[in-house]
Length: 157
Image (cartoon, rainbow, N blue to C red; front, side, top):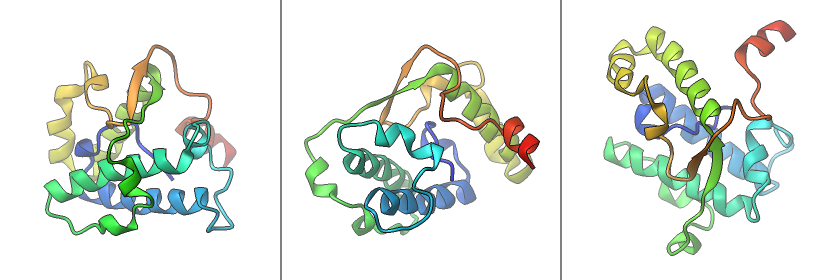
């Protein structure tokens, strides 16, 4: 599961569809509707808010908006508590190092999977902090404590 801090517009088609599905799964985890993934590190920043469900719903809305711009048919009705968010502005801090890490990670994937998207995203290489999901705001710092860098995961296998 990868819940990107990056703006969904940076994702290719496969990435955006995967993000939608993984975030719906994450929403179900937070709603207590699943047995697995309860302690997944990517959920930490949502769990650390005063209302994890509303923050997750706001995150899903951002994905849905990007999908709608691309004429994808994602079901808005799958977003829990969406009406309650109409007048609420929710924000979560994300470190500049995390955004840089995610951007580099995404670009490696896109270089192999969707070279056109990789090329279009290169404009943000110098400062990817300008293209983050609306839910987040930048704070200075390294990679977030909950992140499991690819190198660590490879060492575990």
